[in-house]
Length: 325
Ligand code: NAD
Ligand code: SER
Image 1 (spheres, rainbow, N blue to C red):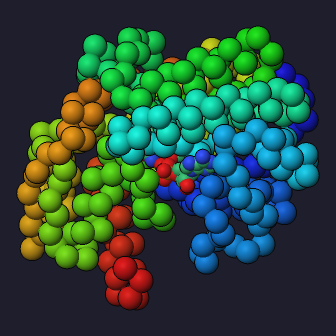
Image 2 (spheres, rainbow, N blue to C red; image 1 turned 90 degrees about the vertical axis):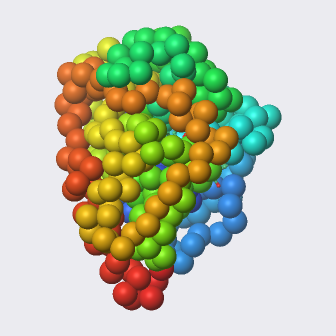
Image 3 (cartoon, rainbow, N blue to C red; image 1 turned 90 degrees about the horizontal axis):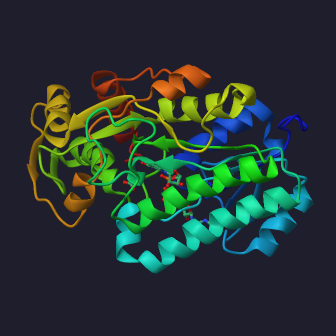
């Protein structure tokens, strides 16, 4: 596994919630000239440096993917393009195509073109109603009920297959719901934990689409980025797992989140009106055992509910005062 070091990076799905936050981190670390952003969306938004290369790429198109890798001499891929859980239930056929075909294309092209390292994120959506709900173990029952979860299980297994069959260095962790202020989330079940902050700051009011009691594992973006970089830089020889590391930071119910926000914004009013996403949320764990990630690559989160809430409110309030919200 001792190929060349990370020099030229391609990110797929770079304009999504995580890609938008990961891009500046990778640019800072490796230089703008060494980062190529790609997405199915056309054009770079203004807040992303025009110094970086941008390519329109549908990950279902393996030929174009290979062309971009050849043209930019890519050696490392962060494969973030995906259709998330709620959007995936609206269009399961599209989720199958983008998530499975896309991941297969990335791994297959990476194998053919001797790519150094590939990051393919997984999700708590790999778990299902038969999985132990509390402190969900690393190695446990993976029988999801969503098309998104199904594609994530397949993605983990496929990545592991490429590690063992071809010696390709593939890594990934099971992100919990990610909370951030850089870009809006893109059609997930945990989106309420982001929307609630925007609505609380802008309108002091939010109707949540899961019940007050719904408790899910969540993580603040700085921890998500830390985990991603740390796993990508970990010593391969220390990894017993590769593509589906449990990672955990905090778990809270939707009601507890609303109460925490109200401590900062006392006039915040909220209610709960569960929709089709309630069933998806109920099929996922409440809390996660991340001891394998801690042991194998030193994972440790920095943010809990109070610290995350404090930061989110501070940043969004500043933006509102500047007329940017
Ligand atoms: P997102 O929906 O915000 O972004 C995904 C991006 O992929 C979008 O910019 C979209 O335009 C792009 N995309 C969609 N179809 C595409 C296609 N055919 N070809 C190329 N690009 C396409 O998602 P995110 O939150 O940034 O998630 C990134 C990764 O992390 C995904 O694999 C997701 O499953 C995983 N993940 C995210 C969370 C979370 O809470 N955000 C949690 C668990 C796992
Ligand atoms: N946050 C993601 C979703 O809700 C979990 O993978 O789909």
